[in-house]
Length: 177
Figure 1 (cartoon, rainbow, N blue to C red):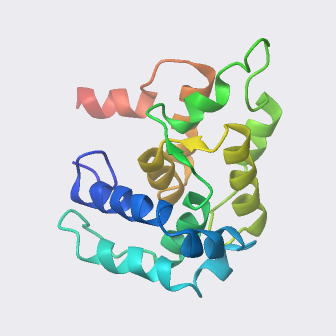
Figure 2: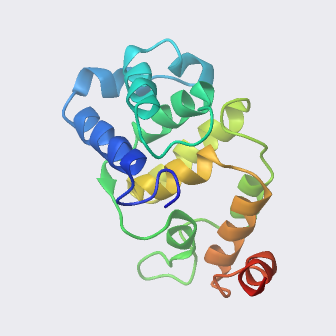
C-alpha cells in the first residue's frame, strides 16, 4: 500500500486532519490567508499534520515538511471530499456546456510547474482551480499528487484529464517484467 492512499495509515491521518480542520474555523481561516507556501510553515496547524504523519507506520522515507505545509494550505480551501480523482474532475464538462471545468490550456500550464512548495504561483493556481470545482476535491488524490509531484504524476494527470487508458507505457512494462 502506498503512502497517502485510501485506507492507508497515512491516508487516514490526512483525512482525519482535514476533518478536524473543517471544524476549526480559526485554523482554517489562518491557512486560507496564506498567499505563499512558505507562510503555511508559520502556522501550528501545519505542524500538527507533520507530527501525525511522522508517527504513521506506512511512511517509508523522510517526509518533506515544506511540501506538507504547502499542501495543508491548499487543503484548507477544500470544503467537500470528492471521490473522483482530481485530474479527471478537471476535465468534466460544466453543466449545460461543452467546456471542461478547467480548459485544456490552463491544465497544460499547471503541468509546467515544478513543485508546490517552491513555486508561489503554482500554490496560488491550484487554489484557484479548487475554486473552479466548487471547493469539492478528492483530498487524498490531491495530497498525494502534490506531495509526489513530478513527471510520473504529471503523466498520470494527463491520462486522467484526457480520458486515455489509465496505464502508462512504463507501468505496462513494470507489470510485464
